[in-house]
Image 1 (cartoon, rainbow, N blue to C red):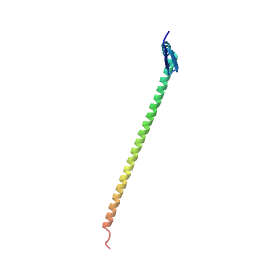
Image 2 (cartoon, one colour; image 1 turned 90 degrees about the vertical axis):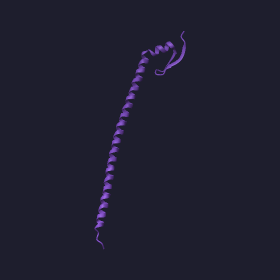
Image 3 (cartoon, one colour; image 1 turned 120 degrees about the vertical axis):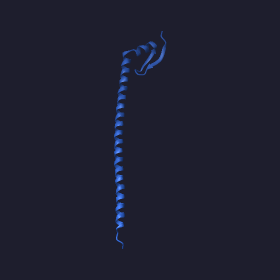
Image 4 (tube, rainbow, N blue to C red; image 1 turned 180 degrees about the vertical axis):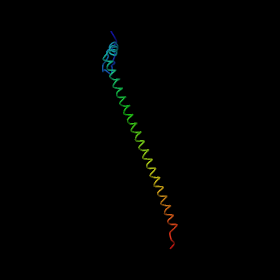
Length: 102
């Protein structure tokens, strides 16, 4: 008589009562189909995860570009404000030079 063992196939939810029972189950078509199904499901989840990561990377890249564009616009606006202030100061100092003495 074969030795009784406490073991189970978690994928198929099958309890083995003997080593022969275990060997028969693991080499059987039901177990192989279950393994193939699990592998396929895992690949599908992996592909979906990869796709989600690629989408997030694209969005991050687009957002980064938008932030850089906004920074460039702000820097250009700051520079224009700085130049406007300089021009205003220059105009004010020129007009003071030519004010009539009272």
